[in-house]
Length: 451
Image 1 (tube, one colour):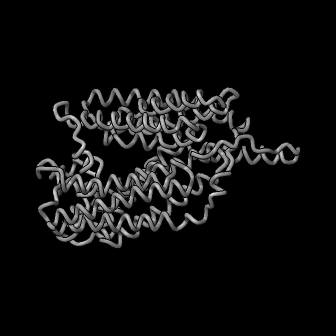
Image 2 (cartoon, rainbow, N blue to C red):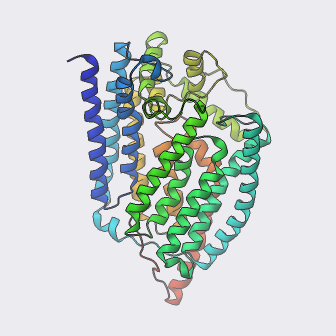
Image 3 (cartoon, rainbow, N blue to C red):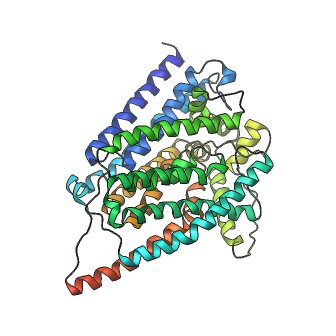
């Protein structure tokens, strides 16, 4: 058996393990959509399926930014790194699974919004929607005027517009939650309409970015919330969602590559969505220059910290650390300013710490996803659950597929209104519970839950 055939078998086994494990987590939790299963599905697509596309994709020139098939050492590092990452992720996901019994998962109630929460959400929606619409329109004009199909960086006022357009997502999501908490919101037809309008609204709000993963990242939280109010419609809506996502991703990919290129599923799986070959790139870079021992992580987090200080007018002098995006630009594109090749967190950890970095990073991600999945089913508040779902969505789409500082940046900047609303909602809910308990009127109003 040749080397390519041997690695193809190994990656095929990884795909089977990932898919079967995702199914087992869904059966165990009695929830079709759960964060453990979703992170495994995304990992399977990003690494082992990406690897199969890279190995079997045809001519070397067609495989993407970085080809490792002619380098046995890099290919071995990518294959075994994929295996080690999957095992580490599964261990992390399994560590907390016994803490949440099927009885708890099945019977956890979801309370309706209190009057105070409804007033807060209405005020937030009234503020975020017009501001977000204006910002989204400005960013779309900016994209059209510059001719960019994907906005990677913005300067000046457009930075604020970027985050305000992200905040529009929360205005839409909280508006949908308000609708299903109205008296006529119990009708499942109303929930379906609210879901479709929310997803279309979020897609339109973020269309200027040209990104493919940002829409599922930002839309997944409200989708999971509204799916909890549906029953027989879930399968049909899920299929429609997958078809719609495929069309959207294909259109965005064609826009980036030009109308003559079209959508190439193999290229998309290989490097446009996948990160397999970047593990080989990390191996080659570490072999030539040694492990970076945290340099790119320090660069990313120091830049993130400096951005916080800039909000209050303080400029930090940072060391000359190289970020992982600068490294990929230098080594792959030969242009340090073209910072758009994202190797993924696994490749970044391998570049800094080798196999130990992959093991530790994926283990921590698995533990975090397990905690989020448990926190999601235990929360009884719509706003808390929306925030937890957002954290889960970031763990799925903004960790091993992104660079190191992506997760905290999305939490702080894009998620700031959601964090504020969840804190305010928890305070108002506590006051309402205490008041109703004293009067003997406390009760759980809505038991719709499982997704």
